[in-house]
Length: 260
View 1: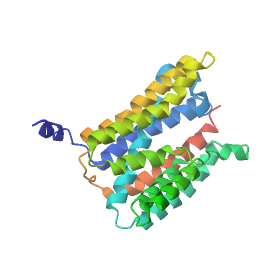
View 2 (view 1 turned 30 degrees about the vertical axis):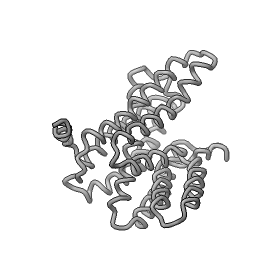
View 3 (view 1 turned 90 degrees about the vertical axis):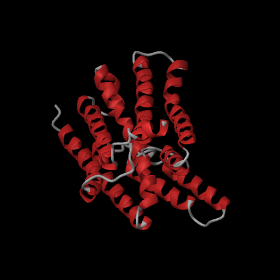
View 4 (view 1 turned 180 degrees about the vertical axis):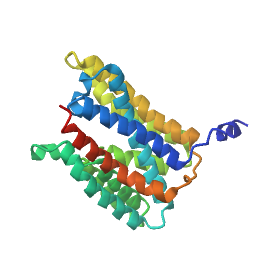
């Protein structure tokens, strides 16, 4: 009876979920770059703007989930990986225009989230391969090391593996997801609590809690509302999601030139 009640909540298809999180992501990026000077000066914005900016963190865990879903259902995993890599390379152009590296050190992490998605897919390919267990672990560790160059570090691979491995174990998935999200956000919160208090400390603390809330919303959205179905226009939506990320970064980069 309880399951049937929960099943009635599953009314949102794959594409609709992606559109929802893209709205949060696009708005967050726009506010961070157009109202601030870059993502490092978000704390100078009014509190409502800060909250909207950090709510964009609902997007990454959601797209890590759909990497695991894409891996599970795609007709060709190799073509899927190539497509992600090509768009990662394309996205790097507006990514560097928006936030140009001033030194080699800025390249850690200096590669956009598409590279995080690409490496996460490779990790799943290794996980499901016929290689011996020790080789699988070694290769995934190597992928995690490479992922330190990307926007989401190792977290992208860890989230994607949690979504995939515990796909049919909702309770364990929720525990693992929550633990990883706490770990991700506790770093900044602990730094504020034990570090030197500055004018921005309360905003950094707020950021940690809002990011945690946003990322947990991804778990709620997928667990309770996702019905496992495609949208009405899957081909259009597929290419829209690929194009949106580099396109919106490029638009923000161009608009930021005229900000003053």
